[in-house]
Image (tube, rainbow, N blue to C red):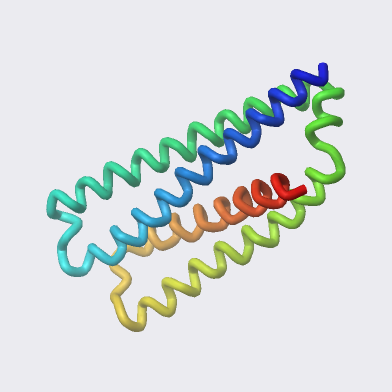
Length: 150
């Protein structure tokens, strides 16, 4: 059983790595698309490439989230796995990660509020989506880095 626990723990970390890659890619492309909107670059081919990248990064986020859900179901169905992979350290890190998620979402919203003074907000839905994903990514990144260092 110990090897299955180790495999599932590695799978959890690999899912987090994929999520974080998608998160960073989404954040960079989202901000690029936001700042390209005003000069009209989003309607040019470079804007289309960025849009495809955004869709692909969202696909990475969805796939890694789906894998995490499958892992959570497996942990829930087997009490021994659940106890091993959902130990006190993991629960503590999850609580700390919620604080990072809050500050990540708030920080992104504040960033766009400050940027609005210098650059017009043309797409509030993209701003909201970016803030939500920044919060979720902050949660996952905090958990990932703190878990690896523990």
